[in-house]
Image (cartoon, rainbow, N blue to C red):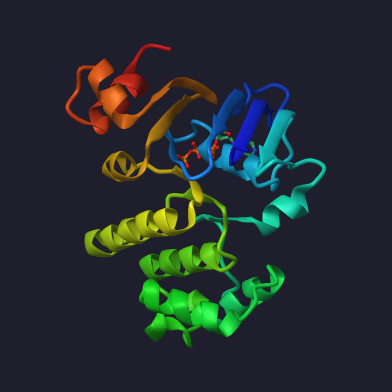
Length: 243
Ligand SMILES: Nc1ncnc2c1ncn2[C@@H]1O[C@H](COP(=O)(O)OP(=O)(O)OP(=O)(O)O)[C@@H](O)[C@H]1O
C-alpha cells in the first residue's frame, strides 16, 4: 500500500480566482522521500494542508496510508505527523510541556522516554524548560520537528523543515531525517525552497506551478533532462519558462 495516493486534488479558495491547486494526482510509495517544489504561491502549503485534512479540498481524493482523509481522517492522523514554520506551538508552555501535550494527543506510550530520546537526537536538552514563545526561529524549527516525530510517524509531511536553521544545524537535521527514514521506513513529503536539500534527501520531486505539476522525476533525471548542473538551475528554468 502506498504512503499517499492523491487523485485529481483541487482547491479553489475563491470562485472568481484560479484554483490554488488544480488537479494534483500522484502516488508516493512507502519509505520514499519526495520533494514538492515551486515558487511562492505555487500551492505547496495548500497541498500539504489538504493532505493533512486541515483544509477541505474543493474536489479530489486523498488516501494517506490507505485511509480516506475525508472519511477516516483520525485513523490516518494517528500514524502521520507534520511540521510547518507557519504553525506556532503554544507560546507560554515550555518545550517539554508542548511535547507532553502533543504526546498525550497521540497517545504515545512511555512518553517521557520518547521526549528524552528526541531531546538527545535533536539537541534540545537545554531548551526543554524554556517557554516555546521565547525561542529563536531556528530553535522553534527544531522543536517543531521534535513535535512532528513524537508519535514515530510512518508518514511525515514537512513544510520547510530547515527554515531558519544555520548551515551546521540544517545539515545535522538532514542527516537525522535520513537516518530516521532508513531506520523506520517512514515516507517523507517535503516542501522546500532549498534545492541542495531536496537534491540530497529526495528520490523524486514534483515541480508545481500555479497549482499544477509541470514536471517531475528524480533530481538526477531532471538535471540531465534540462542539461543543467544542479536542481537550482532546473528550478529557475521551470519557474521562468513562459506560462
Ligand atoms: N486562505 C487563503 N485564501 C485565499 N487564497 C489563498 C489562501 N491561502 C493561500 N491562498 C492563495 O493560494 C495560492 C497558493 O498559496 P500557497 O500558500 O499554497 O503557496 P506556496 O507554494 O506554499 O507558497 P510559498 O512558497 O510562498 O509558501 C496563492 O496564490 C495564495 O495567494
